Image 1 (cartoon, rainbow, N blue to C red):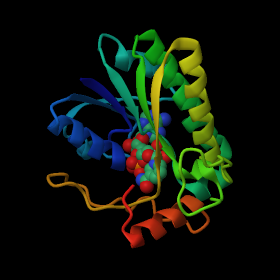
Image 2: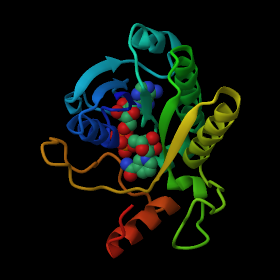
Image 3: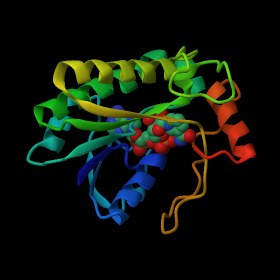
Image 4: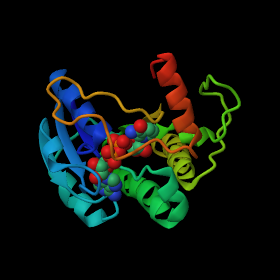
Amino acid sequence: MKVLICGGAGYIGSHMAQYLAEAGHSVTVLDNLSTGHRDAVRWGELLEADLLDPEALERALHGRQFDAVMHFAARSLVGESVADPYAYYANNVTGTLNLLAAMRRHNIDRIVFSSTAAVFGNPQSDAIDEDHPKAPINPYGASKLMAERILADAATAYGLRSTCLLLQCRRRPARPRHRRGPCLRNPPDPQCPACRIGHRQRHEGVRR
Ligand SMILES: NC(=O)c1ccc[n+]([C@@H]2O[C@H](COP(=O)([O-])OP(=O)(O)OC[C@H]3O[C@@H](n4cnc5c(N)ncnc54)[C@H](O)[C@@H]3O)[C@@H](O)[C@H]2O)c1
């Protein structure tokens, strides 16, 4: 498959790029390098573009074909989102909308969206399944939940096929042959329930 990885210069996106490339897929990365790294893009072409710039997005996609998009491009620090919610809603909601509109123009009808356990807010139990109520307690989690809702509405309206990954804050060693080590940019935030769950599960050896 030809996969466009938005945010593929970041921690998770660059590992996904390596994983897909090693599995035989064709990978292209779209990233504005705001928190990502040019030298993390080693498994496909880098299209430097900002999801908040629809014209740059259009230029990046023009003349290219993709079977699917994986969307990891976001701002993702809980404390920062509380201090500057406009920036978080703009990047994570408007940026996602711009991406979805561009995908529709270019007939790409599949997306994997990197969401977060922060959409659940204060967890009601240690084990969280997909039926757990979603009640985010910070703008970061709220922005991700809004994007999830947009994806659900896009499925109904346009037939968009999407999967949301509910990731928990986790830092793991890099994959073999991946130069970057554990993500040190995003230290666990004690105010973030997702971080607390992630840590508890990591200590207990539970895999995500
Ligand atoms: N790392 C974790 O533990 C964790 C946990 C839960 C959810 N997530 C989610 O997974 C995704 C990736 O997280 P990460 O830790 O790899 O973050 P990261 O900051 O390392 O990667 C994000 C990438 O997106 C790019 N980006 C951000 N805004 C952009 C924009 N407007 N246009 C283009 N590129 C943009 C950045 O430059 C960066 O390369 C995020 O959506 C995050 O919310 C991560």
